[in-house]
Length: 123
Ligand SMILES: [Zn+2]
Ligand SMILES: [Zn+2]
Image (cartoon, rainbow, N blue to C red; front, side):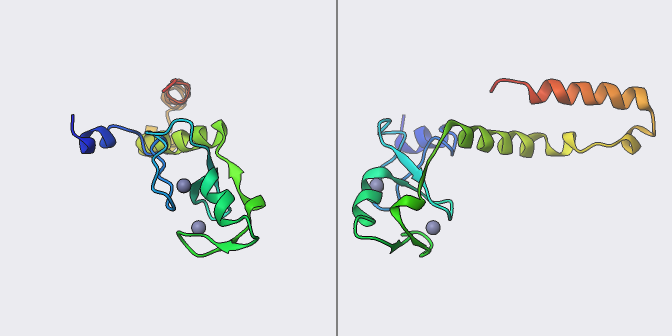
Protein backbone atom coordinates (compact mmCIF):
# COMPACT_ATOMS: atom_id res chain seq x y z
CA UNK A 1 0.00 0.00 0.00
CA UNK A 2 1.48 3.35 -0.96
CA UNK A 3 1.74 6.15 1.57
CA UNK A 4 -0.80 8.20 -0.34
CA UNK A 5 -3.52 5.63 -0.39
CA UNK A 6 -2.90 4.93 3.27
CA UNK A 7 -3.35 8.57 4.15
CA UNK A 8 -6.49 9.04 2.14
CA UNK A 9 -8.11 6.22 4.06
CA UNK A 10 -7.54 8.00 7.38
CA UNK A 11 -10.32 10.30 8.53
CA UNK A 12 -9.07 13.88 8.61
CA UNK A 13 -9.60 14.30 12.34
CA UNK A 14 -7.17 11.49 13.14
CA UNK A 15 -4.42 12.52 10.80
CA UNK A 16 -3.35 15.75 12.46
CA UNK A 17 -0.02 17.05 11.20
CA UNK A 18 1.94 19.40 13.41
CA UNK A 19 2.71 22.49 11.27
CA UNK A 20 6.01 23.02 13.09
CA UNK A 21 7.73 19.63 13.09
CA UNK A 22 5.45 18.01 10.46
CA UNK A 23 4.96 14.98 12.68
CA UNK A 24 1.81 13.09 11.95
CA UNK A 25 -0.44 12.09 14.76
CA UNK A 26 -1.34 8.94 12.90
CA UNK A 27 2.29 7.82 12.76
CA UNK A 28 3.00 8.97 16.31
CA UNK A 29 0.06 7.85 18.41
CA UNK A 30 1.75 9.10 21.58
CA UNK A 31 2.08 12.59 20.23
CA UNK A 32 0.02 15.04 22.27
CA UNK A 33 -1.93 17.45 20.12
CA UNK A 34 -3.06 20.77 21.50
CA UNK A 35 -5.44 23.19 19.86
CA UNK A 36 -4.90 26.94 19.76
CA UNK A 37 -7.70 29.54 20.11
CA UNK A 38 -7.35 30.01 16.33
CA UNK A 39 -8.14 26.27 15.96
CA UNK A 40 -4.71 25.25 14.78
CA UNK A 41 -3.36 21.97 16.05
CA UNK A 42 0.23 21.55 17.10
CA UNK A 43 2.13 18.99 19.08
CA UNK A 44 2.89 19.58 22.71
CA UNK A 45 6.68 19.46 22.40
CA UNK A 46 6.71 22.12 19.66
CA UNK A 47 4.38 24.32 21.72
CA UNK A 48 6.64 23.92 24.75
CA UNK A 49 9.63 25.02 22.71
CA UNK A 50 8.01 27.75 20.70
CA UNK A 51 6.15 29.39 23.56
CA UNK A 52 8.65 28.75 26.37
CA UNK A 53 9.69 32.41 26.38
CA UNK A 54 6.22 33.92 26.28
CA UNK A 55 3.99 34.97 23.45
CA UNK A 56 4.79 33.99 19.86
CA UNK A 57 2.80 33.95 16.63
CA UNK A 58 0.85 30.91 15.50
CA UNK A 59 2.96 29.22 12.79
CA UNK A 60 -0.12 28.84 10.61
CA UNK A 61 -2.02 32.12 10.81
CA UNK A 62 0.22 34.45 12.83
CA UNK A 63 -2.16 35.00 15.75
CA UNK A 64 -0.14 35.86 18.86
CA UNK A 65 -0.46 32.97 21.26
CA UNK A 66 0.81 31.86 24.63
CA UNK A 67 1.39 28.37 25.90
CA UNK A 68 -1.49 28.69 28.34
CA UNK A 69 -3.91 29.46 25.49
CA UNK A 70 -3.64 25.94 24.12
CA UNK A 71 -6.12 23.29 25.08
CA UNK A 72 -5.80 19.55 24.74
CA UNK A 73 -7.66 17.99 21.91
CA UNK A 74 -10.23 16.11 23.87
CA UNK A 75 -12.49 13.27 22.92
CA UNK A 76 -15.33 15.77 22.82
CA UNK A 77 -13.56 17.69 20.09
CA UNK A 78 -13.27 14.57 18.01
CA UNK A 79 -16.87 13.80 18.67
CA UNK A 80 -17.91 17.24 17.51
CA UNK A 81 -15.86 16.88 14.34
CA UNK A 82 -17.43 13.52 13.70
CA UNK A 83 -20.83 15.01 14.27
CA UNK A 84 -20.09 17.78 11.79
CA UNK A 85 -19.09 15.21 9.20
CA UNK A 86 -22.20 13.18 9.82
CA UNK A 87 -24.39 16.24 9.60
CA UNK A 88 -22.72 17.25 6.36
CA UNK A 89 -23.34 13.79 5.02
CA UNK A 90 -26.98 13.73 6.01
CA UNK A 91 -27.45 17.47 5.96
CA UNK A 92 -30.00 17.48 3.20
CA UNK A 93 -31.85 14.60 4.71
CA UNK A 94 -31.90 16.09 8.20
CA UNK A 95 -33.30 19.40 7.09
CA UNK A 96 -36.68 18.21 5.92
CA UNK A 97 -39.70 19.94 7.31
CA UNK A 98 -43.35 19.19 7.66
CA UNK A 99 -43.98 21.04 4.40
CA UNK A 100 -41.78 18.55 2.59
CA UNK A 101 -44.29 15.87 3.47
CA UNK A 102 -47.21 17.86 2.17
CA UNK A 103 -48.24 18.58 5.74
CA UNK A 104 -48.65 14.88 6.47
CA UNK A 105 -47.88 14.80 10.20
CA UNK A 106 -47.71 11.01 10.33
CA UNK A 107 -45.09 10.79 7.61
CA UNK A 108 -43.23 13.64 9.20
CA UNK A 109 -43.14 11.87 12.56
CA UNK A 110 -41.87 8.69 10.92
CA UNK A 111 -39.18 10.73 9.31
CA UNK A 112 -38.22 12.33 12.63
CA UNK A 113 -37.87 8.89 14.20
CA UNK A 114 -35.69 7.78 11.33
CA UNK A 115 -33.46 10.82 11.72
CA UNK A 116 -33.22 10.08 15.41
CA UNK A 117 -32.06 6.55 14.61
CA UNK A 118 -29.49 7.84 12.14
CA UNK A 119 -28.16 10.29 14.72
CA UNK A 120 -27.60 7.46 17.17
CA UNK A 121 -25.53 5.34 14.82
CA UNK A 122 -22.20 4.61 16.40
CA UNK A 123 -19.64 5.36 13.74
ZN1 LIG B 1 5.45 19.46 16.43
ZN1 LIG C 1 -3.44 29.89 14.03
